[in-house]
Length: 251
Ligand code: PEP
Image 1 (cartoon, rainbow, N blue to C red):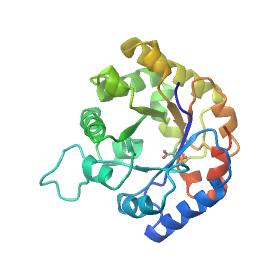
Image 2 (tube, rainbow, N blue to C red):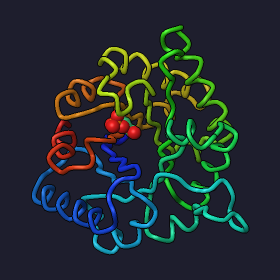
Image 3 (cartoon, helix red, strand yellow):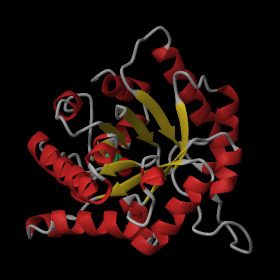
Image 4 (tube, helix red, strand yellow):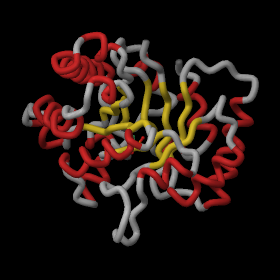
């Protein structure tokens, strides 16, 4: 059956020492706690190897926030999926709306990244979601469907089974505006239906679909209670133990 997951996305926050301190504090807070979800922290590339060296993988799992769309070679400044995997990281966020909006990541580019991540045994946390104008004009389902179709639907059912999805309505990211519990459930059910039509109901039912967008201690429980919401991708609230742990405990 699918896993419940709470994944932090630190974005471009925390220097190396601050990152190490946060992971140490998270582990201390989780020590002796029986949590009912996987806890993942996705951090800047430069932190990965050091954090991997001190992380208790039974408590916290390690992820990156991006990888290159090429395997290797003359791509100055890029970091390949193989390099990410060599640090010990097991997850990689792909297609975050900030990457799509500020760095021109198209579905075609993301398709390459997903394949390279999987080829290197990284689990992609593949982000999808509509902008405000698209929701206001009722196009959210079509937008999300296209992102899934173009980014993921050339995967075999076996490879697709290794992917985690994160629905993040762009208008809710970092804005303090959360999708209502009903809006989240409605979209997550639509996503699962879309997956079932392509890969079959069993594969769709086995896929974790996370919600992201101003998720916090106050709204996590209500969001996670929905049958098709399998956890959260957490930005701002993942930067402090006091705001992240209550979300983990919402399960
Ligand atoms: C995110 O960027 O993935 C996110 C969900 O951010 P926030 O929780 O800050 O809205």
